[in-house]
Image (tube, rainbow, N blue to C red; front, side):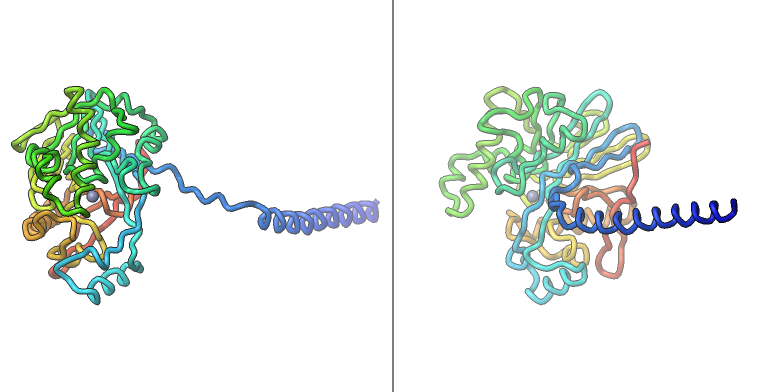
Length: 326
Ligand SMILES: [Zn+2]
């Protein structure tokens, strides 16, 4: 009896070992044969801000030669800043937009690049849908400024991507970027900015869906615009407040986290008025660090949400803690 049990045990052990060895060989060959998937997770990140639901949406990323684009600094400084963040030029740069469901209104802040900025961008609608919404549900679109990577997603093949939305932006940006006279006198390499803005806004203007504003103020309950001229003449921040919580969406107040948090006086070639842009950046950084509210920006690493802490003469970016919606 005992011998039978022993044999049985040995047989089981052997079977187990054999399965194990074959399993390992099997796993090894399966690993080698499986093609790499090479796609990322859906590009949205969701959180609550008081009673509001905030969804950061990725339009994609674009490689920027930031060593050539940053101004009011030097090549060694840029290199050092990037290296401190384990980065180098060209820098894979996020393009983010933010969807805010206030309850009564679904509001989109910026729209990504659509087809205006190359094949690695233009993913906003895909990610909006993946996040559980449809473009037809968007009631309001607030544009931080009329650069192509912020308005390009408004249209696809000349048609409104958001057919039920009213588009709002600062009158000063509309006057500047939608002016045929300005397009005419712009240097050849800048004409695309004007053409991009015109192609993106004109279908909404025709449909009576473009309503520019000319003062700071509440656009829907809980979201207000705040003019910060510099990066463009009509650049605006959007301040979102609900249930005692505050989020300030910065648009293009910053482009390169690794360099401009430590030294906010560093500017970028895309600035219309780089001196004014630097002043706005310093003011916004100081306010965010002092008050401790949440910040979101178009070109900070996705989801582009976090807090700012003062450190020495500069600031440290503290990305938001990962959280699931409850
Ligand atoms: Zn931008």
